[in-house]
Length: 183
Image (cartoon, rainbow, N blue to C red; front, top):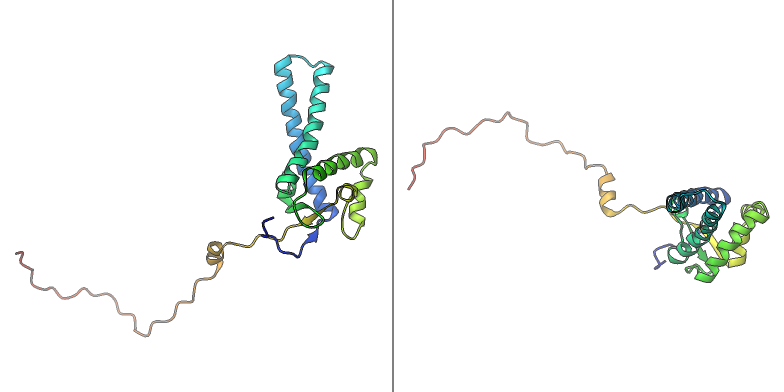
């Protein structure tokens, strides 16, 4: 992204991606809770139709959330926290269509294969899961942040204090002089 990342990248492994997913799942659960609260306040009922609509819009959010964020920034909140980025195979940003396909395949593999499509990513050398293979994407670990010059200057130890060649003499005020006249 704008050439700020070095050409040497490392694929993100299964466990770090699992942590990122759990953080994203927490975000999705918060959105679902908020949708439930809004539906109960608005419609004042727990009817099946209302909760069915909440489930539908939760799924829409669960697909739109990674689709939009992977297209714009390459990271969801979970991936941002774990320093993982999703890019196309050439290292460029993932296009919207590929990002949408990746999100749909992610949830389909999770539901229909009971996560086996995700486990494949842990077994492959390039760490690409089933949804990465379908979408032509890869997840990579970002290098640790480099400290700014200001922070680096703070971390450096102060220079050693050299011993003064002049012996320390207690301070003595100068001898009193005659008062000055004004004018």
